[in-house]
Amino acid sequence: MRYHTFPDIGPDTDGVGDLETDVEEGVPVAEALPGEGRIASGELPGGPAVTTVYIGVPEGLGAAYARIGAWLQEHGEEPAGPAWEVYYFVDLERFEGRASLPDRATWRHRIVQPIK
Image (tube, rainbow, N blue to C red; front, side, top):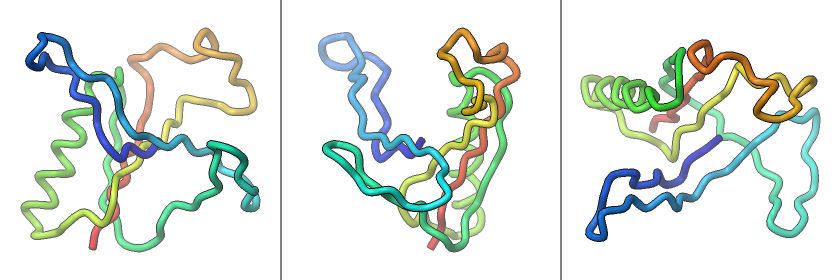
C-alpha cells in the first residue's frame, strides 16, 4: 500500500475525522500488466530509501512512521515521494478474506520511505 495522503482520524470542526485518503494498492507481478479503467499499471521507484519493520496491530504504525521521520531529521534527509507499506502477513496464494489472516498482534509490516 502506498498512501499519498493519510486520513485525518481525529475530530475536526464537526467532531468527526475525515477518513478519505488517496492510496494505491499493489501486488507483485512477474511482468507489467496494462491498466484498465480505474486500475493503472505502475512500478515502485528505485533508489535510496530508509526502512523500518513494525510487528503488531495497524493502529501502532504511527510510531513506526515517527521513527522514520526522526531518522530523516537526524540525518538531514528528505523524502522523495510517498512511503509504502509491505504486509508480510498476507499470503496471496491462500488469502480468502479477513478470516484467513493471522492474529493481528503478529502482523509484520515494513515501511519503505524513498529519500532524495
